[in-house]
Structure formats: C-alpha cells, structure tokens
Length: 238
Image (cartoon, rainbow, N blue to C red):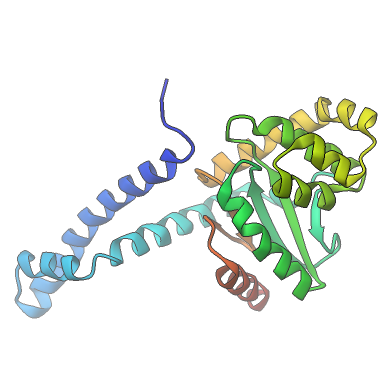
C-alpha cells in the first residue's frame, strides 16, 4: 500500500512528467539544434540550464492537454451538479467546475477568487464537486451535499471554510439538522462522493482544487486571473 499523501501525489506526477519531458527535450531539441545550427547536445543542456522554468511549464501544459483529451471522452456527466450544489446562477451559460475539499488550504484560498467571479458575472454557474481526499473531510462533504438538498449549499460552503467546524457551519447555514443528518448518510450522497472520485481519477487530477473551465481541465490554486482567462477563452471558443 502506498504511503503517498494527497500532497505528495502532485509532486510525484510532476517529477515523472519532468523526467519524460527532459528526455523529449534532449532528444528532439538536441536533434534540431544539431541539424539547424551545427551545435552539439552540450549547447542544448546549457540552454535548458539557463531556462529551467521551461520544464515545469511544459509539464503543466502536457498534463492539461492530456486531461482535455480524457474530458472529451467522458461526456457531460461531470458538468451535471448534485441537486443544489451550485454557486452563482444555476441556469448560467458559462460554467466552471471545481473539485474541492474543506481541509485543503488551497481550496480555502481559492474561495475569494470564485466568489469574485460569481459577483462579476451574473451568467456564471459554478458546479462544485465535493471530493474529500484529506483525513476528516468526508463528514464535511456529506453535510455540504445535505445542505444542497435543502437549498442552502452556498451558506454552508462559505461557513465551513470560515469556521472549519461542521456543526457551526450547519448552524450558520440554518439547516434542518434532523433532515441533514439523514441525507448526509443517504445512498444519494454516498453515490455522489464516489462519482466525484471517479471523475477526478478519469481526468488525472491528483489534488484539490481542480477545475474545468469550458472544456479545459486544470489543477491547482491558480488564482483569479487564470480562472477568468480560462472562462473567457471558453466563451470565445463557443
């Protein structure tokens, strides 16, 4: 059994991608440099050592390209929200999907970016996929989905990140607790959590937050500007 934590997984994948990209770069770029400039592989190495930021950028671009291919094969199920688990306009034509975990500090940091996007765009629909990958997150995710069934997801979602306390967030959201406790352990909620895990694995996501803007999947706390740009590009692409 692997001892790798959710935080370790992205580093492991990135390391693997960087190794593969190094091989490709030295193979193809080295050949190109030799052919067109008459230079040997040591010049290629020098170029890469002088521009090390190229490799992480290439790894990220490759990872996002592969995720996009997998998304194209999945159909539209990942865009269909669990009842009530939507931020912004439930009927909005511009769609952002977020995979999130309440014990993920990067998800908490991204909350302000998502709320800003929602405030700026009345036609934005944010589909939240509860993906409890950290220890202790399952209870919070289940209560969040139960809140969605009562039409109070946004209130619980914001309160949970603010308090990191399920009971306090449920109280702040004004949940009917008897109903919420039943719904939290229901088959529908269990199925949703399992489905979100399947979606995340299918897309190659290794941690939270992870996103889909239009038809482009990508991971990480990328910030407001990248999220905005991805949504704009998706709208322009139709």
